[in-house]
Image (cartoon, rainbow, N blue to C red; front, top):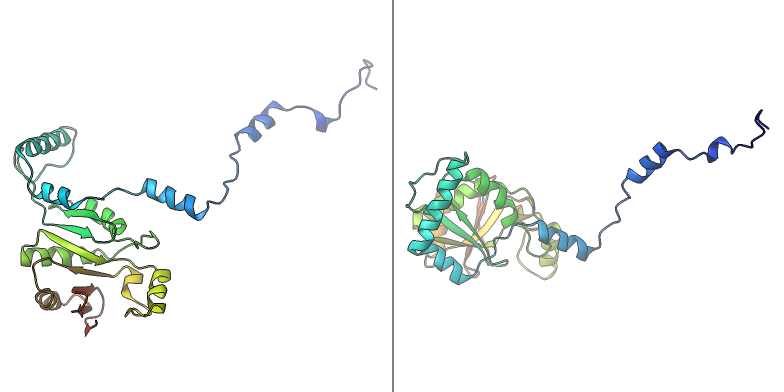
Amino acid sequence: MPADGLATEPASGIFDPVVARAEHLVPPEERPFSKKEEWLREKTLRPDFRISENELERAANPSRREKAARAKQLAAEVKKGGPEPFVRPGERIEPVTTLFNIWTHEALPILPGQSERLQSRFHVFLRDHFTNQATHMDTRLIGVLTRVAGKFQARRIDVVSGYRSPKYNLMLRKKGHQVARDSQHTHGNAVDFRIRGVGTSQVLHYVRSLRIGGVGFYPHSQFVHSATGRVRYWTGS
C-alpha cells in the first residue's frame, strides 16, 4: 500500500492518451481487391478516349462555334502560363492523324507539338483489350504511325492490336491463331494497323522502306504489323 493508503492500478493498466491517439491514427491494413473491384478501380482511373464514328466525323469538320470555343480555350491556357500554341487564336489545330482502336472504340489524335502528352496516353490507348492491362510501349511506334499518316495523307489509322499480355497471347495460340510464342506485342514493341482506302500492300512497302524493325504482312486480315528491333520481313495470314 502507498503512504496515502490508496491502491493504484498496475502500470500496464494506466491509460496513456498519447499511445491511444497513435493507435487511432494507424491506418488499417488494406484488404485485397477482388478481380471485379480491381477492374472497376482501373476503369475509374483510366482516361476516357472512347468516341463514336459520328464524333470522329464531327471532330474532322468542326462548326464555326466549335472553332471559336477552341480558340478561346487556347487563349485561356496561354494566359495561365501554358505553352504558346502553334496557331493563332481563331485558327484550327489540324491533327496529323487520329488513331482509332477497333476493340475499345477509343480515339487518340496525334497533334503537332504535343509529343509528351501523346506518349503518356499512348501506353494506355494500346493496352490489352482482353485483360485491360497496359504496358510501356516503345514510343518509336508513334513515329512510324505519324510518317505513314503523312505519306498517305491519312486522317485516320485503325489500330488492330497494340500490347498483348502473355495470358492473352497464350490463349490465342491455344485457339490456333497465328501468333508467335514470344510475340513483340507482349513486350510492347509492336502495333498492327490499317488505313481505310489505302491498299495494305502499299502501306507494307512504305513501312519496310523505313527500316525501323520487323514488318509483317497479313493479306487475309488486311493489316500491317510494325515492330521495333531487328529488321526482318514475313507474310502471315
